[in-house]
Image (cartoon, rainbow, N blue to C red; front, top):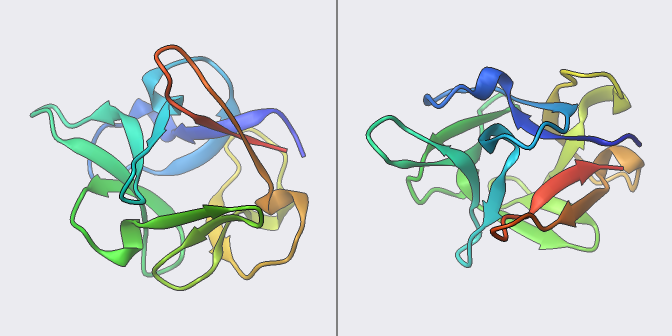
Length: 132
């Protein structure tokens, strides 16, 4: 779709920070780590050092939150894309928007490029999702 990457808007390291698509700038706001227990952890941390993870909100949008062991924060990575364990829907670029600041949400599996993700390693290894 494009070469924008998953980004925390304004590098906000607070609970509720909005997730968007943005041009790659190699900051911690664009670094993500896939954990062995199914979390997508941000490169950003709270000022007190706590980790922040990708979370689905009740309105099916995405935000950062402190890890709390709920399915709203757990993901399954497969050939179909990134599926939320909260409702079985997939990480999707809303309306296939290819512009900077594009909104992410969860949507039913549709096989479009808005749900296709590539991962690239950085050094140290922290996979970064890249929109197609």
